[in-house]
Image 1 (cartoon, rainbow, N blue to C red):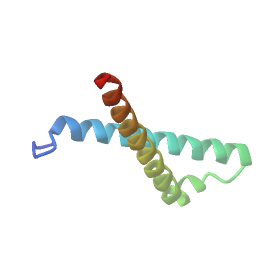
Image 2: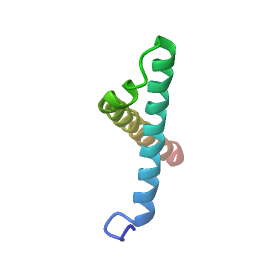
Image 3: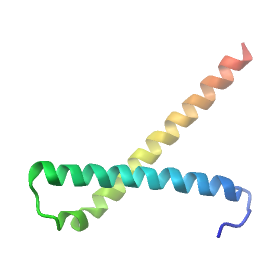
Length: 79
């Protein structure tokens, strides 16, 4: 399914799986909010754009945390 390019197929699969976890988390939060507020079930479909934006937000938050971890670990190992 994935072909090797400058970014390896393993990296693509890892990032796709991380994004799918973020999407699942956003979808779960949407379901939780629908149940909590007693909204109609159709909001699962009508709010998919919001779920997509939330999953992108979660993904970029994870990317920032991974970058910070990488930078801090490099600084820690140099000392």
